[in-house]
Length: 216
Image (spheres, rainbow, N blue to C red):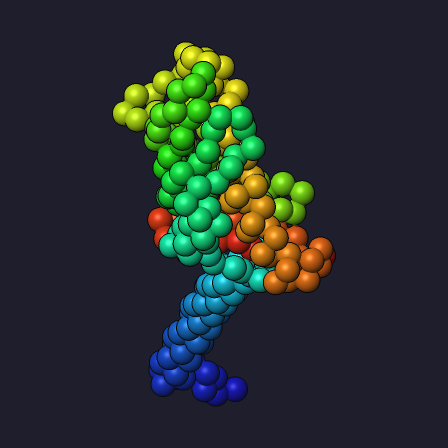
């Protein structure tokens, strides 16, 4: 039989070229698959990063209503309620001035003026009070931090004469809860249907008090 045409030099060149083409196709397919896999992984990762915060936020529960009360408004309402003086309900102590100073970290500090009547003596003094606001049982509460600062001196309540320790502490508690916080709680309850809403969080800055409410 005559020589096989497959051994012809042209056939050998053709076969080499075809092997090269197949190798390039195989390599190109492998590279394309690798790039596509990486791209798909990046896309899925981007979707997960975008969606997880939304899911977490939904699980934590968003407030239904956010109320922002400005510091200026709080001071105007307090001034109207005081009308020049405020009976603290504590014998011998009358509130004569009040200024609220909101700060970050849920702080509502006070600059107050008191008239003290004790042992036939009447005197006026100023007191700086550090307060922190909290949420308790779905309502706002406020608590004094440390002792009031009388004038420019940080005086311990235990060092005050005439049993003024208990009197000033009681007066500050009365101002905090009856004059300030109870008024805000009452206003929120009347505006949002009484017990239908509960306060679930608060935050403060230099300008106002942010209150987050959720329907029960």
